Image (tube, rainbow, N blue to C red):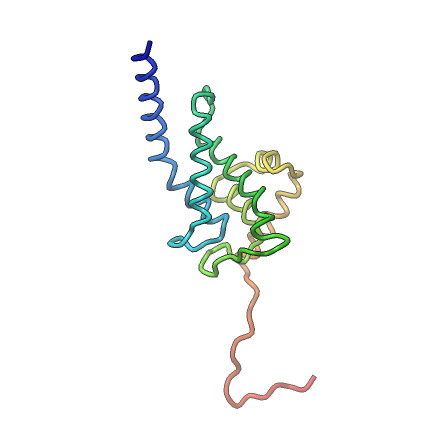
Length: 167
């Protein structure tokens, strides 16, 4: 009996290690995009990944044919959505790193854009995961994409000797 349990636990550990070897890099990249941190300095993304992998490991035996990557991605997105208000919302404690490609986007825009474009999750699935209407997901994704493709111009330095026209 004990030998069987040890063998089962060893198999479970090997399966999970193989999953982590294949999925951790992609999940970390998605978490880094969500948190809008620099790729080489991403402590919040690493914490989010650690929690996601711990949750996935705890559920490993109960997955029963479910895709472990899909479960991990759902937890990662849900965890980010729940914590984004505290990190970015009312108190604004955390600011996106300007080196992040998605720094110009709000947390919800980043979440939808990462799920739709980076992870390739369908609009209907994204809407169901976030509890939003499909049309809202479509609108937010379009707006976020437009923001990234056509960033707002900042006022640059004026040339020396030019005068500003009176208003």
